[in-house]
Length: 231
Image (cartoon, rainbow, N blue to C red):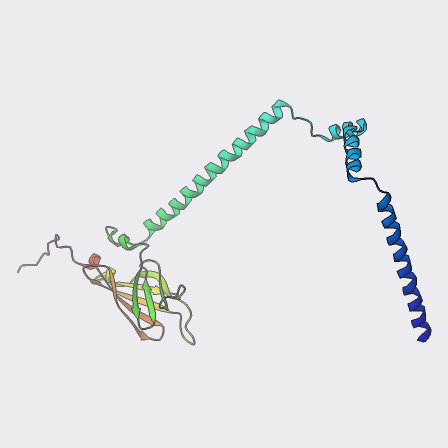
């Protein structure tokens, strides 16, 4: 171990001595170096006197100009691409409108499409710490008051009012799975009212909700005469 330490110390001293000699040589070289102005002048002279071979090599590396017919074809291709993208966007927009129209036609909005007035609308009611949202022909939700997301209470399935008044009830099913229970569902009882309003929310059974919704659409048209049978 002693011999190894002795050898390491000797090597360290030799390295330090070599570094000192290198520093001295650098300092001597700086003393004999030309001024900065002389160096700049020399560089400018070399830049002005470019090697003709280098100039020719740079010219050879330049991209040759395309013939006029190539440039014209390229411009036509860009214009064709622009027109294609424009037409494609219009086609996609028309497809979306067609799907929306087909969905509207295939849905039951009443004999005279009167219930279509509620499409894409939602109505809220706060009950204790929860906000319940009823979206006719959409999805019902339950969420904490002030929260953004919520729990699905079902999606619209069908009118369920029966033969006497089909449009007096709605059924929503396939909501979020209830803990140790069924998927959540909602039945909507629709009553006549002066304005569209969700007036009551109850849960008569576990994860089965009952909403009461009032709307002028459920009121009897006063212009229609009621025909009575005479005996």
